[in-house]
Length: 322
Image: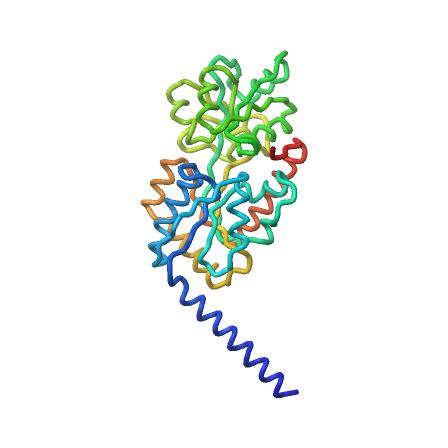
């Protein structure tokens, strides 16, 4: 019996040593970074910006691979099914918190089937209205929505997008009934807003900021917890009459579940360096991102909070993917 115990201990030590050696040798070849949306969008641009510097620090190129479809679940499910060896990563975002509520029979659990590595960045939205809309503050917008004989219509770039969630959270907290008009992308929604076909949108700040400065649309409030540095005169929704209101788009790096701790730690440490690089920060600032670079534990805690918050909004609104 003692010999058997000793043999088992030796085998476990050998396995542990082999796993440690494998982690120490990582990475020995290029790493795939799966982006679950089409090339050219916000998430894709962020992944490419971060991926270049991260690859330099790791000593291996980061190869971007776009796998769009079913909102983001096709790309996310693909990553779930890959081996947890550090050679397949995923850059995803707020859909990690919303997919379980939006899509029936989702074949994975984001909180179980992924290793959270780091919250990379966030990006806020802004409530913007057509200049003909008389409301200039959140209070006035609420009053107008409640007193108008016809609904106020807001545009969204897609069903379940951050702007859609932001508007539904607004409806629930303000007691309004703003009506959604879904578009195939942010650009056509913005054009209809400028043209007066819809009254408002909860638009991504980077997409709306130039039109705000030109006067073609008017900013009412930002959805972030603090004022946005490039729109310092625009208040937050929370300080404008809806305390506790906050919603942002967020983006993070994850891997398949059971990624070795050594690889997780290495990735996190290099992400922190990446998010402090002056060139990366300059590009992110121009695109309207707020850089973060959290620890894996902080990222997991953040996602859990978002699951609770956004899950409540989705359940109350009855939102389901079509």
